[in-house]
Length: 498
Image 1 (cartoon, rainbow, N blue to C red):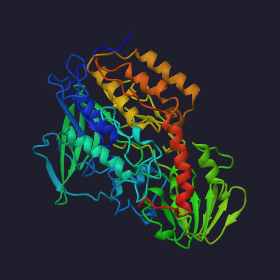
Image 2: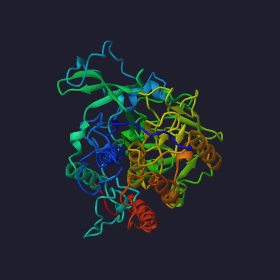
Image 3: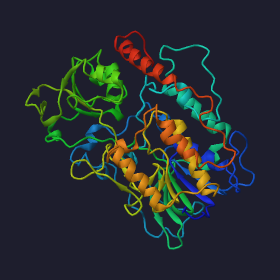
Image 4: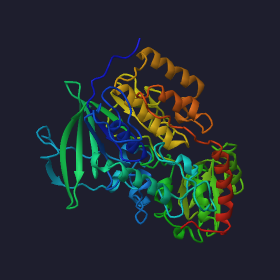
């Protein structure tokens, strides 16, 4: 038994990062008879007559369209609030009443709200480079061209180059025509007709908000999960002097760490990335991490344990930090939390989305799992709701593309989803094989093709070119070697990537 055919003409894509860009492009290249025109022009007889992407920033690109000069909220904005609760530090904006008669052409205009606590800005900072080979930071319809001159970090690339690839792809395919910028999705509901009703807020340059509602047949959530910073609950954290607490999302320069006693909380990718820049200028550096923890890559574990290590924090009293083994660290000037991000979708209720909540006070954290998804993509109870980018893998662009391809094939009726029972059986089996947290969504680079990409491509529209045609996964071991080499070279001041 399979899921019945769909009647989807209009699609809303929430998010304008790489996953949202991949989705809009794929839907525009899918025909009404379930075929793909990827690599050529948009479908002349499109399966989906209305495809709209919504991006809350003033440009598409997601994390790769950064605001380098302006970090996100400073740490002092967290004082007096439950900093560990995403609903508190990323509050929903109050929706005005009487929007049912307002459209994008005739919105309700109100005074603008403060967008600072909406976490719109990127975590990118000067000098940031990828941990992914350049060939996997592009979509499959972009021909891979090796660089004419190899950089010190090859096959890795700088954030600027990733942004340039995305900008060119968007421009070449005129995708901005299908995005509404400075537009935040405030609410997603199902109406009595079975349509998805979106409440939307467009921020104008004049400081006004334009509110309206709009209906769609289907919704893709492609807003990512690297926006709202997660800081774990720690007793006494608010007793630290103002200016002490920093989250990695707000890191921009080493200046605030110069000649300071610094404690870094967390030793995965973001923590190690920042350490290579701040270690040469600090007075002292200590890492608080789970004893014996093996990080995502062996070289990161090796790098983390080369510094002074402490176990998890038990409490903080002013400038003194106490640890679970009974030891303490005094005169701490800066505490940098490299502790990841919340899974947070405030615009959609628990009726359509459920998260595991392993955090303090039963709150969703970066360790959460999005429940009820088939292949990390289709909502099992209502497959007109889909997700792109829930999967965690370093093969990001191609996996985003695979998700979009699968959705396009299913929603155009080129392919059929299995029955709900079969989908739930897959989720249960995956849960047994992994765990009820973010590991459920994790696909290492050496298995993502078999266990995620190729599986989603089984639902592809007819004639869709193979996403990984001619790709060389042999670049991944080279990338790991390059990342380790760059860590020690940058830390030693051998070169700068500014």
